[in-house]
Amino acid sequence: MPRGSHVPRLDYPPLKMVQMAGDAYTAGIEVHERDGVRLHVYSAAKTVADCLKHRNKIGLDVALEALKDAWAVRKASADDLWRYAKICRVANVMRPYLEAIA
Image (cartoon, rainbow, N blue to C red):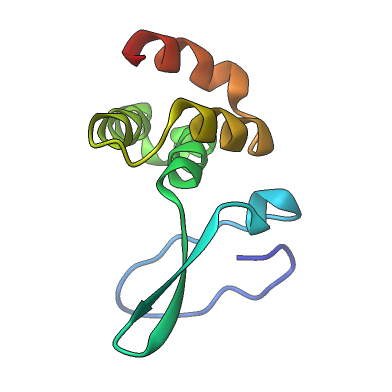
């Protein structure tokens, strides 16, 4: 969610929200249309970078699994992963893992 916005209060499903500002919030948004509804969704590479950024909250194993899956099914290229890693300020964290799988 954009920085400064109010977190919605929902009983179900349980949600944890993070607030982002600037390019970390706007970069990597793709628009998909399903059943006449336009959906704004982050790309796979941006999602991997976000997972690495929040690895202490979701677990490093989850973040690395996201990286491996995105790479294995070719949903994200090394260039895309690197670009979003720099935007999300996790390039130094991602470097050794990206070198290991590439």
